[in-house]
Structure formats: C-alpha cells, structure tokens
Length: 67
Image (tube, rainbow, N blue to C red; front, top):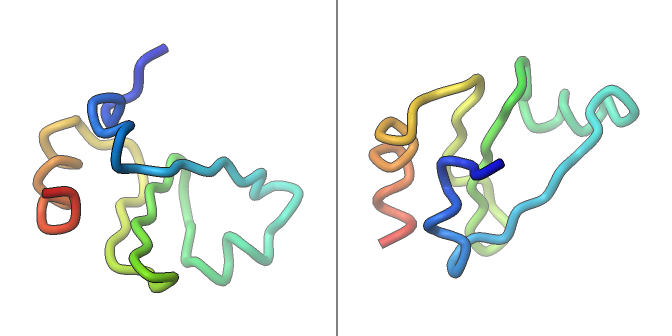
C-alpha cells in the first residue's frame, strides 16, 4: 500500500515504533494518536502531525523541510 509520502522516499527516512510495547517513546514524543508523523532535523523534532491527514495537508505542513 502506498503512503502519502511515497513520492518523498528519496529524502525521507522512516521508522516504525510499536508504541504499545514502548509507551515511554509515545509519551516522550507527545504521540497521542496514530498515525503520527514526526520530522526530525539534526536530531531535533521540527514538526509533527498526529492523526490521519490528507496528502495535501502533509505536503503543506512539511513543505519548509522537504524542499
């Protein structure tokens, strides 16, 4: 199944975290719902989208970081 960010695969590294097995990770990152997309730059959280959103929303939200 293609995800909304498939077209960005050349500049995005993705990671899947099993928050049910690692609740501390969810708490530390402020994840209150899934899916959660977090954008890190140089190890710092720069932007986050919590919950399902349309592709256009994600493109606008992350535009400053994804060029």
